Image (cartoon, rainbow, N blue to C red; front, top):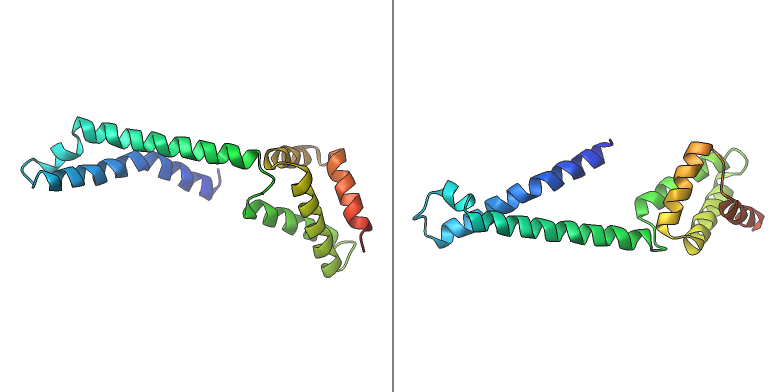
Length: 147
């Protein structure tokens, strides 16, 4: 796991506890401090409200993920990773400006032709098999022929 993934996982797991603290503290203030703080945080409705908010957040994340997978707009980090890898490979045969132009053309055309989910599948295939799918090859060839 990458540090980013570990941080994301920890953040996701800690979210319900933070929600319980926030909602419990608000409940404690509403009660004017007449009940013990621990009792306010661990009250049944605080726990239920925290879990409901947490689940709503998960549903929102899942929805966002599904929309991203079917979109032709790729996350900036993936565009950057593709471009850096492409330029690194292309500079073996081209000067830096030509390589950057070629790679920009390639990622733009790939975004037009394939959804993000399809791109991720192709990327995984290329990393495993070290060969390009034919659709990507056609795009790369057409970008290489552009002046």
